Length: 216
Image (cartoon, rainbow, N blue to C red; front, side, top):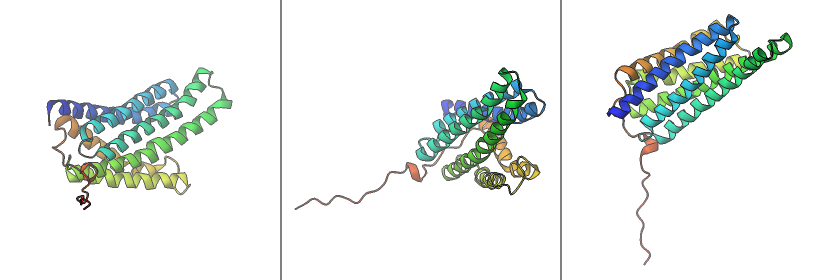
């Protein structure tokens, strides 16, 4: 990789690690009633989502522009949903934390968690795994883990949405392990090695058209 792309890769890796730490720590903070800390951590998580989306798009836009842009857009959506879920909790905190508002605020936050860190992240992980597989930017095993792990998380969160399995229960936690492992492996790879020289994917190849036959 060129020096600028290597810097981008390392920055993306650091941001991926930031999203890992902040997402887990935010859950722990909310369970401990440390609302201000939880909101702060989710703000950091949202920034990390946006940053990784932009940096991955920067590194892979020439190889697969459509999918790189799709991934970046989905990361932006994920960040927006996370902040949407954090706002009611912040409002409750600033209003004095009355019981009349805490239950609805927690329900909005739970819904935002299911959509943003569940449904949206599963789709963008599938897109990223597919993108990395086609461009050969990382080992194939890592790309496959992302695509398959995203599918598992998508199935798990749809099952939670329809009440098939408990919300944020043990089954959901186990289903999230492949995506967690994928992002951690990707973060370490980006920081230590960067991405391989990428191949152009289908959405970056010019469309061939039939030659024009001049009119007589």
